[in-house]
Image 1 (cartoon, rainbow, N blue to C red):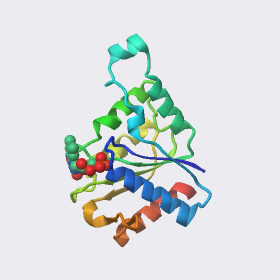
Image 2: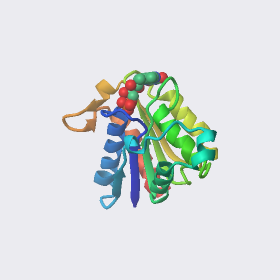
Image 3: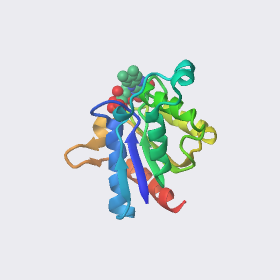
Image 4: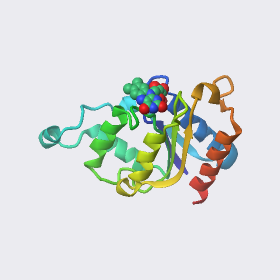
Length: 181
Ligand SMILES: Cc1cc2nc3c(=O)[nH]c(=O)nc-3n(C[C@H](O)[C@H](O)[C@H](O)COP(=O)(O)O)c2cc1C
């Protein structure tokens, strides 16, 4: 099982990349020791802001094709979406918009766990709702949606683990659905 993992952020110390990485590590330690985990960094896929004019002049950016290919090569996805002003980061939305010119179903019907980590208590409510509401349009096979709020109290960097039992249980339930349907 090939699993593509990333935080939908261009922050070098992204709490969402940390949560996605934790969830992938938990998949390997508790569910699928042979899972093949590949983590990617959005900074490696930075493109000019999508515009119809750019697309008409130069076509779809190669990095969008590469990202779409990475999703296509995966059996499952673990993505943690930061919430910026109630929705996606512009870093992710730009990649999303470019990929949608290849195929509207950018997630290619791969099983997905959608996570969100936030410093405040909101736990990514807005961005996770956006993922769920638009799932039918973008080819999302949503197996779990988990927001982890008050990140500073939720995660211990020394042990690389979540501290609250409820968060761990929610992630384990989603991982069970990711691998078993
Ligand atoms: C432009 C901007 C908008 C933000 N908007 C929200 C928001 O709507 N809700 C929220 O909970 N946090 C918001 N935050 C705080 C982010 O959750 C915080 O910066 C977090 O670290 C982002 O995740 P990352 O570290 O994975 O990039 C915002 C931060 C920035 C810079």
